[in-house]
Image (cartoon, rainbow, N blue to C red; front, side, top):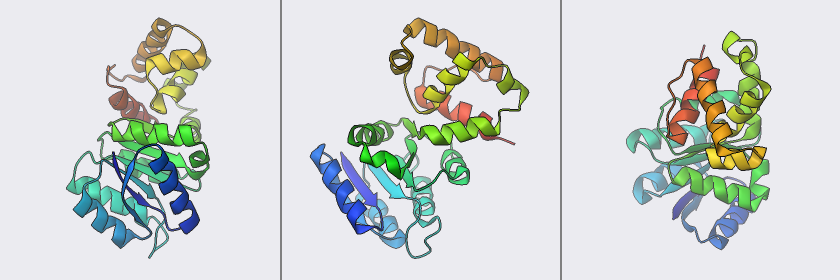
Length: 215
């Protein structure tokens, strides 16, 4: 699996390269700036891009904007964005185009190799990997809305795990319940939120997040 990595801090970039190579990823390019990222994504056509939100020269949202532009040129390009803090605006921008293969993780997550590598693989496969803290903030932001008030604590727990990109099997294992119970909770969630159920994990995550963050 070919990866383009963009991170301006040398030590972190080098560490990520070594980590990914240890898990049999091929590093097509490891760059430190927005212009370099744009060129690498256009010329190398990687299987997945792992991108820091803030890159030179602007040090604002250069990395995110480069990734979004690359996804417009190549719809569905898998992108995993890394950020130092939870910034809901960036999460909304990443989700806005509605295509699969997206992720948003806090940089703290990269120190858990298994968790980080799982997120990269999930995004590369067209799935979703959203940081639990991002999901929690999005849920809290909409906590006063009537549809959200209608969810039981168990259903909110299921939705948080679902929004992280987990399958029903994984949710069942995490919550120590049957897969049938998770499927029932999921069906109830979509009914209460007025969203059509779907067997596509990524599509249902995007639908839930889009609902929670609209308005």
